[in-house]
Image (cartoon, rainbow, N blue to C red; front, side, top):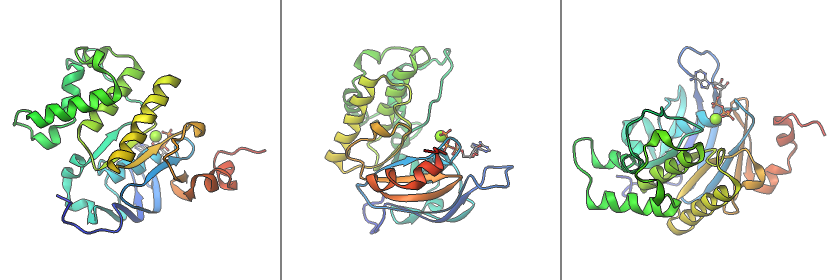
Length: 251
Ligand SMILES: Nc1ncnc2c1ncn2[C@@H]1O[C@H](COP(=O)(O)OP(=O)(O)OP(=O)(O)O)[C@@H](O)[C@H]1O
Ligand SMILES: [Mg+2]
């Protein structure tokens, strides 16, 4: 779809506001962000800053109310929901009902559904991509379990595999390590870095724990009160006064 398009930035936001329905104040405002293909960025900022809103504006789950969002050089509005075929999204700490009838292997395959189409059956390629993702996240042992009966960390790994099964062009992760133990966090972080290296996969990761920012991440976007207040190389942002200001650290 996007291969024939020429673009300078795989993601480009210009003066973007997103207001939730029924609200008056934008949850993100006047956001300007240019991301080149293959970049690895971390998005940080305090609770309620607008990080999740930013990711969901980029994958079209939320409609921006001002400005321009271009993905692969094309206005996101023109994609409709088809944009989500190209964007892998691992949402923030979600839960599923323990009665949810699907097995883990089905949920991962559903990650391919945007590509399969609703009424077509899965192809060999779909199974192959799903299998690769399972192997990468090392959850072979969970495949036959009902999705509702996993621990929080197991569920998070399944959601990472589901996003990777799409073989996406852009990967958005919203605090992917929040319920993982340190070993699992390190392993998943390594896998995401591996994918970034191998496939030059454009990756945006919301992260709270600064020491666990992957080494491949070269750029940090700091958000506070809906606005991008710093955007630059990792050390520059981490050492800036704005980080302390945003988190209200007084030392
Ligand atoms: N569905 C919603 N309807 C109305 N306002 C919302 C909704 N979701 C989020 N908000 C508001 O938008 C702002 C940004 O929220 P967002 O979830 O993007 O923050 P965040 O940076 O992801 O925070 P956290 O670190 O806690 O996940 C907050 O003020 C929040 O209250
Ligand atoms: Mg959030």
